[in-house]
Amino acid sequence: MTPSPAAAKLRLATVWLAGCSGCHMSFLDLDEFLFDLAEKVDVVFSPVGSDVKIYPENVDIALVEGAVANVDNLELALQLRQRTALVISFGDCAVTANVPGLRNLLDGGHDGAKAVLERGYLELADATGQLPFAPGIVPELLPRVLPLHEVIPVDLFLPGCPPSAERIREAITPLLAGDRPAMEGAAMLRFG
Amino acid sequence: MAVVTLNVNGQDVAVPAGASLLEATRAAAADVPTLCHLDGLNPVSSCRLCLVEVEGSTKLLPACSTAAAEGMVVHTHTPRLKEYRRMTVELFFAEGNHVCAVCVANTHCELQDMAVTVGMDHSRFPYQYPQRPVDASHPQFTLDHNRCILCTRCVRVCDEIEGAHVWDIGSRGGQCHIVAGLDEPWGQVQACTSCGKCVEVCPTGALFRNTDTTAEKQPDASLPALLRSARDQHRWHNQ
Image 1 (cartoon, one colour):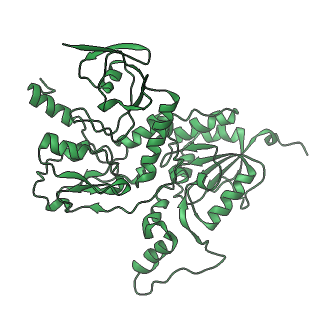
Image 2: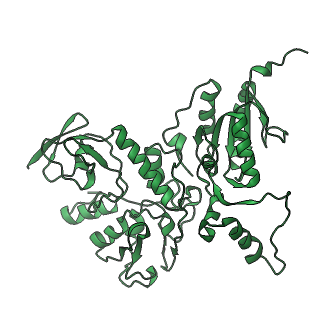
Image 3: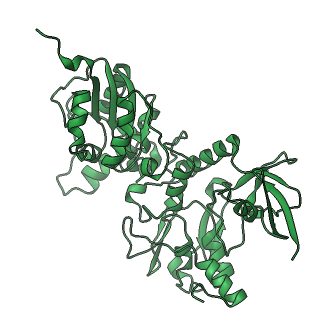
């Protein structure tokens, strides 16, 4: 068997935690740049680019969308940090907790999980409302939604809701060449 | 006209006596960031972004409310000042509930712009998620305390330009908040003329027109300077 030319490629992962997937949609908006990207990276884990269910070892770059809101998010965040050289907070939810973090406002932030479940499943429900209960199947919510860097060390922050395809391209192109992008100015940094 | 001469970032500048240090830094094109300051309103130096180093002073001085003096040697962008400014903006974000993506002022927000200016890519301080109310009692406008940074531009424009003094600051420290009238719902304050100047000068989405939704607020913060020059010098922008 001839060695795969892919062996020299960077191993890229994209991860979807508590976000709306809008950052991934923006990633797909890279359009024809995705062909260039595919020549330089192997997408080893991604909700939009592979069917792998277990986060692999030896990942070079991970784009992590979403805040950390439940136990599955937390487990995957810890796992990807151990297995990834460069972790990027991808979009405002990963960077600030953004809209998923709004539930931290309920109940004074003490037990936002209980408060948001009761609000969603009981207070706003019809007469048959009940709290979801499926241990081991539906991941438990954490009491507080956290930005990624409050859970694991993050190497690069890529804000935006979502970051535009152009901003994503400008951020990852230098990384493919082993350089760091200059994250400054409104084109690269603006929240929202 | 009396003139004072001072040095800003190695450049000698001359400004009229009585000018502020901020005006002197502008004469040197030093681009000192400001949030609470607004041309046409009296300075209060509440945001602390315009702090500069003046040689011979152990304290950092707010440029907006410090008078330029003869012979001053001023530094506006030292590493220490840049770090403090970024920390200050991070604290603004962490202190309130600022969610740019769903804010009425998205793309027209001075706090959002300031995060770019100081190079804030994330907050190193945990977000506080304070419990703050929204006052939607006024028929035309809304005050969302979640987005207020207590710059007091609304307080000053209402007092100094409109002459109605509807707004003030209530409480102390971390409990500080904008109050309408005698801490009443805004819609019940008879002194309010509904002129909307407070909405125009608000740097964030804290004050907005009820008809504006996400990213639709288009404020005009140049209003106080225009009105002041019209009154004091009988000069309008279009003349």
